[in-house]
Every structure is written in C-alpha cells, then in structure tokens.
Length: 397
Image (cartoon, rainbow, N blue to C red):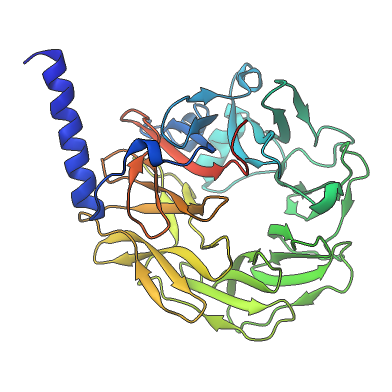
C-alpha cells in the first residue's frame, strides 16, 4: 500500500468513527471558529505515579481548526522536575495565564508512599502572565510572596487587579492583589477552612467560593460573608452566571453530586439535572495514582440560559445541556465506555469545546453548541492526553 493510500484510509476511518461516535457528520473546516485554544498536554501512560507524568506537562495553544500548535513559556520548564499548565486568558485575549510548577522528587515519593499531598514543603507553584505578542512573561505571585503554592489566578473586573488562591500553612485561601502583584490580601472573611473555586461576580462587587465544601458569598473585600444553605455536605466550585444573578455548582454527596443553581441572595435553590451515577471526575492516567482524577464540573452557556455538563448514559460519559427550566438534551451519542470531559463554550456561544477519548486517546474536540459538526482539535500521540481547554476571549488579530 502506498503512503498516500495509507493516509486516505486513515482519514476515512477517522471521519467514519467521528460520525459513528458522535452521531453527526463533520463540518467544512472553513466554517470553524477562529479563536485560539489554550490547553495542557503531557504523558499519561508512565507507570511510576502521577509525578513522573506531571513533569511532562506543557502549556500549549492551538487554533480551533487544529492548526498552529505551539508550546508556551518553555523557559519555565528548564529546571529539572518543572512543568507548566495552561490556566486561562486575560479578558482581552492578549495574555495567557500559565502555571509554573515544580515538585521535588523526594516530596513526590513521600506523597505517593503516604497517598496524600504534602503541600507545606517540596513544592513551588506560581501564576504567570505571558504576553503572546511581546513574548514577555510576568510572575505575579513571586512579588511579595505569600505562599509557595499559588493557583487560580483570574482578572478582577475593570482592571482592579487579580484574584488568586494561595496555600497558607497548608490551608487554601482566597486572596486579591493589585495589577503589579503587590498588596496581596486575604478576603476569606477570617475563614479558617480550606477554600477553593474562588471567582468574582461580573461587576466585581461580590465573590464566591467553597470553604470546607460549603458555598459562601461575600463582598469583594471579604466582608458580609454568608453561607449558601443547601442541606448537602458537598458543594463544589460555584460559578457566577453571566448576569451575576445566579450561582452554579455541584451539590450532594462527594462523588454523587449534581448541577444546582441558586440566586445570589441564597434563595431559589434548584437541582437542574442528574449526572446518572457519574462520579464527576475524569481519570487521566493509564495507571491511576492517589487523587489523580480531574474534577469535571458544569459550566454556563454564554447567554446564561442553560448549562453544559457531563453525565453517565449507559456505560459512557456523555456531553449534556440543560436549560434553567430543567430540559435536558444529550449532545453526544458515543461508543461504549467513551468518556467526555471539561466542556467549555466559545466566546460567542456558538461552539462547545470538550475532551473525549473516543479515538482511544484523550483529545480535545470542537462542536457546534448543539453537539453537531464535531471535529478534533488536538493531535497528541498515544500515551499522551490533552486536557483543560480554554477559549481565547477574542479572535486573534
């Protein structure tokens, strides 16, 4: 068989598989969106624990049509046992948020032996901004450092600075800082619990997060802190609706929790949908390690009128959409044991980005908002995975 014929056979098999697995035909590539997509790729098949796989992780970007892949901020990976993750964009799409991570092999070995993380030593994690046009890299959390482990960087509205989540004596806290990285301050409202999933409302006046798996809302400076009562022991990663009137989060028991919404004043709690027995986490590694799964949480559509989430249907994990009235649509219909994960709507709301292992490799895909016109975006080889896709907020100029 000639090389050309082999290529044509492989292409025909891929597109036939895409049609079968997703129940839709592929679109004309010229109709694909023009945004960049930031994501993380790395090995997932090394048998000696998650640390040896983590070390291979690299922050990357690719165009939504699958072309132009680039590895970003390679200077951050020159130190042995260092890696990067893509963690978001600036509101204007000109800067990428890059996590710079390092762990000592000794600490990694201790953690694996004890099957728990030891975050008070042996780690160094910083949140950096990469200007894509100028190529400049700014480490915001190294300035007036408050922690060795700093994640969750996001932009406060109207250029007011940044929010981030440092670990203070092993306890995660919501912090804010000025645009130059200075004046870092705790906005937890004197909370003593482990806080995570910290975000600001669209107008920047309110913040929300979960602390010890209970959802809290407060003023942006941490005052007027109030717990959202759900009656459930596990509440995770609250997300503000685009108009700032609602919070979306999963609620229930650990590994048995489902999409819920509540008004910003704590009223109107409502379960939107059931995940059908899905534990809400996706395992990345071929040889699972302790706590090596990644949380797979629901997200708002851009107009705030519906929510994308993943749920178990048969023995597959499918991509779903539910309206605020509770009307559920199954957007993918896949081969047995296929897993979809990490949905994310495009800035114009016309497309949905998500991960899937339908080909046997964990790749990223783009489809129209209703699940049609599916096409693969990444091309990581066997033994690797593509995870945590982030749309660039605006088309690249």
